[in-house]
Amino acid sequence: MRATVKAHTNIALIKYWGKRDEQLFLPTNNSLSVTLDKFYTITTVEFDEQLKSDQFYLNEKQAESEETEKVAVFLDRVRAKANQTIYAKVTSKNYVPTAAGFASSASGYAALAAAAAKAIGLNLNERELSQLARQGSGSASRSIFGGYVEWQKGIEADGSDCYATPILDKDAWDLRVLSVEVTTKAKKVLSREGMKRTVETSPFFAGWLEAVEEDLITIKEALQEKDFTKLGQVVEANALKMHATTLGANPPFMYWQSATVEVMQEVQALRERGIEAYFTIDAGPNVKVVCQPKDEQAVQDALNVLSVVHDIHHCRVGPGIMYVTD
Ligand code: DP6
Figure 1: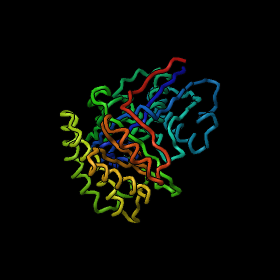
Figure 2: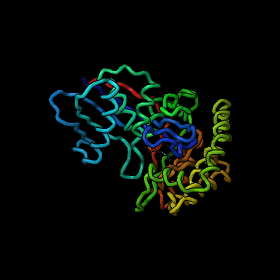
Figure 3: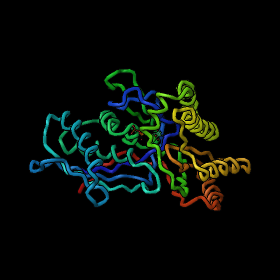
Figure 4: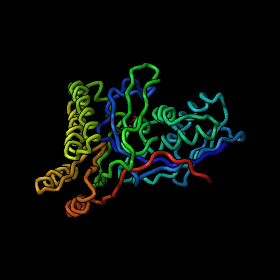
């Protein structure tokens, strides 16, 4: 009753921002991401009759009780599905620079969902795993698959039509994502709390929902046509619209810091110099820059010069979940 899974993080090109059901993690809009090869989580789940409670070891240390509780709540869903009551030991290692503000919940819950399901003997397909991972963290639904992935919001109240589907294979289009870590000390509004506050209070949220539909059509055309300019423009504009909703929330909040804006402006300046690069930003100050392989070095050189840039991680399009044999 043991299984190990490796899952990669993803970056949303069209953002998931807002829930229609917080318990089931049902989003208000479809989102579209690219899975990244560089950052991943490896998780082993072992169900054991001897255990009196779930145990969670993260990065070689016993996790804090709050973290363990979240994992236990997720395992309850898996146990309920399998009609079991047996506890598990979960051992997880994050190859994600979380200390630098990069999120690991997408790869974390994708790996946990797949490993727990396999270990307990549930024979779930990728779509079912996507639905399960979604109930740990929404963006994890997309990390089950490699390449370019769309998460369908669905319309059913029980979430039965809410899962991710692959749009384009990882080898179909070789784009590069530079993950730019900026120096920061600020406290973070977690994405879960941030999107809830926005849905409940921001007058701009209605505009977001309208705009995101258009952006999804545009990006799917860009992916089909492999039109990088079309893709980049909609990616950058969509991120800006998501962040605009937070300024209208009550109380208002902002994920950007001055370092974030410096990187954004350098990306725009690069385009003026004829190097095509576009940025996107999640619920934090770091910036991801999307470009084509031929421009990767020039983008790196330009960003490296900025004193606010702490580190740059180079990512390619990554694969879906993998079962690892011990
Ligand atoms: C801004 O998936 O972390 O990164 O479902 O509450 O766990 P929960 O939120 P999470 O939110 C990600 C928000 C985002 C955009 C995205 O990844 O699509």
